[in-house]
Image 1 (tube, rainbow, N blue to C red):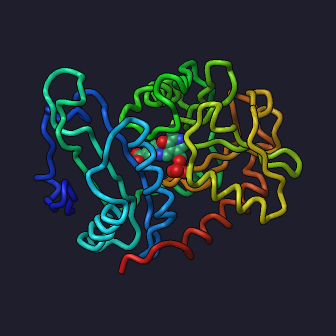
Image 2 (tube, helix red, strand yellow):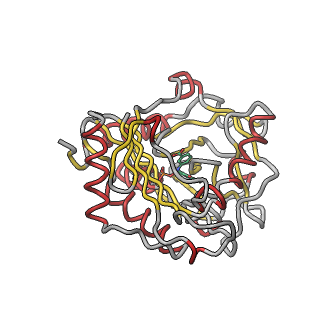
Length: 289
Ligand code: PXG
């Protein structure tokens, strides 16, 4: 495996960053997770745009243009001869000294890792997930805004630990007011009648790229699509529930906090959307070769 760091490629064992990098010392940096299907990078511009938006939000100037960044991604996939891959892009504040001040970091570190995608077991999709609401609340937008895909994921990791300790597959995180925000690494949707609903990002969710695509595909299927305030009650009484994310795609949920959702099996719209999304992802994207 060849890993891109600041314009050069290094074998996995030699791909290293300084212990003085503020990405490590303080979680000061941002990341992105993109997929390639069939020799094409899916939703490439959307991921690159979100990377640069995350950077801007933390006042981090990425030392290359979007076009150069895109070329570096394509080069990384070619170098590793990958057609289907998960691409992890990381931009840290760079090497500084001990002390928070980002002015000590003269140049951001840019890392691109492309690896084979390890998919969730098929039975997760067939049977659906059992998930729980956890006590850890989503970060306040006024502190670390959940719209930023920052290297500081401890908020989500604490929620994930709580799910793990309870034997649940994922954790629903609420915001400070008790409204549903999202899961630790996926957005959440419900279906009630002919309506598809998901929390507004202002309730504490990442503006997921899969989320956006699924909303478009659902409208094409004739569903009414709303971004709104959702409580746990809305989820408990929904006909269907599913999660979305670049890695997981569309994954059904059949139980939340011990309540069966719908008839306890992945619902028909969830299945349809899972298939429509996968079909769309396989057929669209920016060619690598
Ligand atoms: N919410 C959060 C908090 C996320 O980090 C999503 C939702 C889904 O967004 P997309 O754009 O992928 O549909 C994410 C996605 C990883 C990793 O290890 C990446 C995410 C989540 C968990 C792990 O690369 N990002």
